[in-house]
Amino acid sequence: MIQLLFTVIISEMVLILLFSFKTPLRKLVILAVDRMKRGRGPIMVKTVAGTVLIVLLSSVYSMVTIQKRWIDDGAINPTDQVLMVKHLLEATLMGGSLFLALMIDRLHHYMRELRLRRKGMEAIKKQSRAVEDGKVSKSEEIKALEEERTTLETKLKQLESVLDSKTKDITTSEANVVALRKQSEGLLLEYDRLLEENQNLRGQLQSVERRLSRSGSKKNS
Image (cartoon, rainbow, N blue to C red):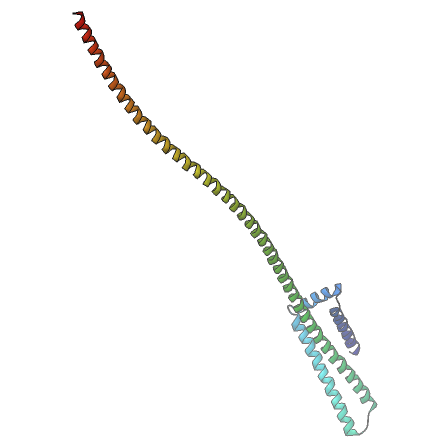
């Protein structure tokens, strides 16, 4: 019994040391404890712990009984001394094993929580990096859009200047067309006047020729 308890305590101490230091075996130990806590594992552990606790209480009761016997008899029996030491050692070992088992359970729980929190922190860091990368890409996109807007504004100003010059040219051309139209109208009026004068002169010339022909015919007769 005592050898078994020593073996259990040494095993528990080794597990605590493996939990305490970061080694390749720690992951294996954590996985083993995880599997032990699944299925029927917790029931078996509670059963063993309950049995050890009952034996511990039995040893304590035996020590109390032996101590009462010493008080009643007033003398110390060597056999009772051996039994007292045996029960005391067993109770100490069983109490220590239960305490170390509780420590292992708490260490496993806290390390599991720590691992989950680390994973959560890593996920948050990845998300923050992704957000920062998105911000950088968005800022670059905004800069590109601003440059494109500046280029378009420059082109728009150039087109506006070209449009103004074309508008001025069109206005000048329209003024020239109006002037040419007025000039052509004046020329048409002048042409009509000259044509009318030409007709008048022809009429006068014909009348003069008629008179001359009449006067010549009178002389011949």
